[in-house]
Image (cartoon, rainbow, N blue to C red):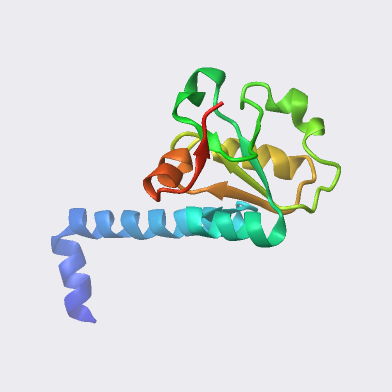
Length: 141
């Protein structure tokens, strides 16, 4: 034990860096467990759509729709989602899969849905880009 204390004293910068990394890992994991929604890969999203009749919500802006969308996805841009959230579904327990281009903005929409009493919310990890990379079907309207 004495060696560890001696090491920490001689290499204070390394010890502080190690402590900082450990704290960041703990904080990141706590956020992941307490965020209230789950991130799903495209394969799991397909299972939710087929087995649980999940609603798919496209929150990209209109100028981003050129690469296509998931079949039967409902489009409500993130910028107008707060005003149109009541138009989604009356069944707030129905699974909802939210996606954007890369999966970054969908977290905001998921939090907004949870705040409005939707209980079964999922974010598509990697967004429409991951969906297309997995060669899953899309529609171009």
